[in-house]
Each structure stands twice: as C-alpha cells, then as structure tokens.
Image 1 (spheres, rainbow, N blue to C red):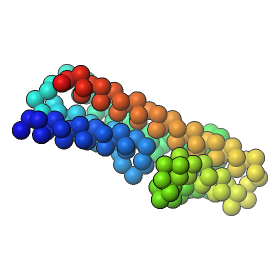
Image 2: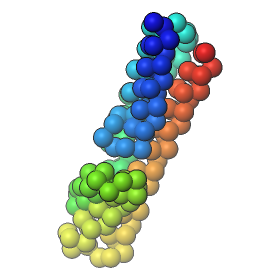
Image 3: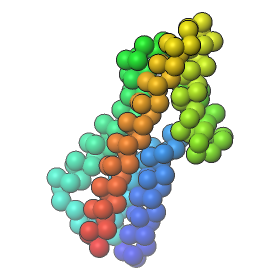
Image 4: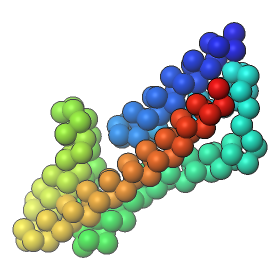
Length: 156
C-alpha cells in the first residue's frame, strides 16, 4: 500500500510541475501535497524543517504568483488596463497552448494599454513588465517544485 501512496505522491509532484507553467493549477501546493503523501503514507521520511520550509515557500509563491505580474506591470509604468489585459491574456492563452500561456500576458497587457489610449512605447513597457512578472513567478515555482522532486527522489 505504501508503494501506491508513493506513486500517487509522485503523480502529484509531476502535476505540480505542470502547474508551475499553467496558471490554472497551483503548482507548488499540489507538489507539497505529494510530498506529504510520500512522507506520511508512503513510508519515506523528510525532516520537519524541510516540510515546514516547503509549506511556507508554497504559500508564499502562491501569493507571489498573483502579485508579481501586477507589481512588475506597475513598476514598468502599466495601468489597470494593462493589468486587466495581462490577466485576460493569460486566460485566453490557456486555450491556445504553451505559446499562448507564455505570450498571453505580454500581448494582453500591450493591447490593454493601447485600448486605454496609451502610446505605443508606454504600452510596450507595460507589456514587458507583465511578461517579466510571469517569468519570475514561473521560474520561482519551477525551482521550488524541482527541489521538492529532488527531495522526493532522494528519499527513495
């Protein structure tokens, strides 16, 4: 039975890795649940400090995933229109596959700013900020989930 829980834990870790790219799945929390399954039901142990670190990091990254694109868009001179455009771009990007997910926030912020009457150069800067926020959030999530996967493999 422990083998089944371990396999399910790894399935959740992989799902969490996919969630690091896909905005609809909260990657780190899903991976953390996988770590907990492996720890408590799979018969493999992790230190309490490591579990606490992964829990806190998952919560922080869940919050940062929503705040980073907004913050970087603002930092690059974006307005609410650019932020809404980036959000809509992410959602529409989900329908168009991996490139849509990557380019959706960028194109959405750019179009949002243009529709709000901003100049091309200002809209471009806002779009760069939205894209940077997306990249930062995704990179941080991939690093955390990668560390969780590494820890899980080390526990075997």
